[in-house]
Image 1 (cartoon, one colour):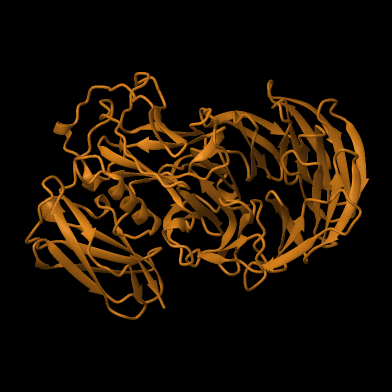
Image 2: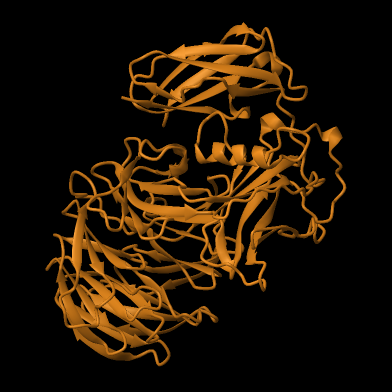
Length: 638
């Protein structure tokens, strides 16, 4: 995974304690503490500064770090020669419980980082600052949350989010703390907390809510209502997650777009043949424009300040000036247009034609059609990376790639393709994207409902590099949730975390060359405004050397049980129950663990098939329930 020389720094932090590793409350002061000052480590011409900033609220003093509140972890990386920021880096970091009472030395930091680079159920960081998830919007009423870092190729189902009804479209809030999912048959919008992956609330969103769109400043969430008699849009205030306005704009499916300055919202009305314009500041409808026959898709150009409308019925691509609010151009393509997209700050627009199996490419600076590129049969969606446009085809397993550079030349457009599955994803049409950019540059993820898989493709390859299982569920759309460190300013890399409990932690920071190691201390105290949770009496660690099992063969798991406070072996437990189940719960086995001596116990089972197995523990005599201890994970292969 990391083959280059490494820059490794370890910082000690007080942060997220799992239930099994709590420091007794008596050892932690409940008085608010001032936030630690920035700490800097410098070596070999590189300076790395660590700051942990609290996200203040009405219950916290400025500068204090309290448990169960949000905080920003920030690394400022610069050159010691002039202090110039070092940009375009891919830093990696973890926050993990400090096992010893002293600050880890350089060797211990290196060992800790190495253990994180080789994921296992025996050693995982308590907070992974590089964490990202692959989300699948399934045909049934749930969302799969897959942790690709825990086992690429076999993948890991991190959790399954139940919904009130099957989802149609989704979008992340501006602060990435909430995932909104439209549920047409329920008439609601699910608001999912991305910190816990649980539904926070279901919001009434009008009849048949389908397309969801977030305006640029993130204040309002707009929901297209595809009801037969009351089609239009519902506006949700994201601050309160409550109804803000409702507009009956016309009949048919609705797509939504915005001007860059949050001045106007545009709503297409497919059956009515119109585009409705709404003043966002006043939440008032301004006018309707007859756009053509069956306007089916919208996209706003940040360069030309023009809204482009793709008409399925007559094949016209209509331009509406974003200031004058009137039609200024009309490009004649061909009937059958289904989707139109313009990459951010791009000069080129792309309109997908399902009937002719082509992509029409136009220049927003001249409003002129440039190319009609043949693609696979029945194209229905288009997505982008920096270098390519990816065209999804509902009647072919192949994805077509169009190289974006050179489109202004008369030369033939560069087109390639790759297989994203074994069969065409027929019958799996989705409003939400079925191709999504990956966390890595120049890579995408492609969902294939027919195969019930998600494929990972890296540009330059002839075929996907790997795939993620969706555990027998049909992924109708895919989304990547990246909560890792991102460059938020020149040389500044940060992310937000939740600090659930007070306690001593190490923060391990990893970068490419040169190779450095250092450790620092900060302090977080218990939040006096939050109720204390009862500590769990025991801790369980795996002693098994093999972290993979073979389907159909006996596997023995050995564990060490210790007292959570004294760390002494917990002997003679007669009721140490073990629950083993195959994700997502299609097979399970329960039994009591057998002690082999000095707090060491073991259980055996035969995995019936390949997949990810979760192992949970309980001890009624100690008041420990299955959901109070972190599970161990075992990957079973053929």
